[in-house]
Image (cartoon, rainbow, N blue to C red):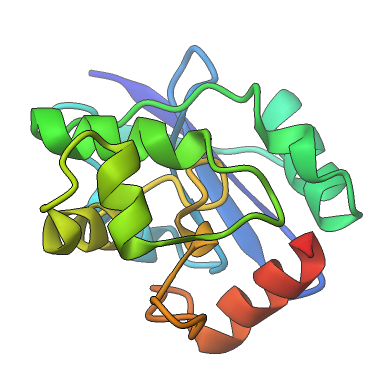
Length: 165
């Protein structure tokens, strides 16, 4: 039995909720106040069996607040834990290397993940990313510059991209 911790903080966009493992690694996060929007994305092997609500998650809460206040690199050193196939895990790691203000296309993301022809798989990695913000899938856009889809909505993605530019 594992107990995860969950906290929601207000941001300029909407409430932001994070679920962390006992060691503080982010398991899931996103712009929602409802933890049930997050848990289905967490690998069953990592999903906590119980959740304890906390007002503050330490470094994670500090990073969320700092990022939204303009310290775009505040999220870089926060540990994240996700499980998927080998390509998904490489694709999520590649996303963490995309710098703020330098969005990449889905094709470029596939290349960064080591499989240039796997553009759809790279897009799927974005869609299946449980640790949004800390694994910044919002930094992947369509060829030509259109924002593309985002679990938390097009307005949130546009805000994030503008915030980082």
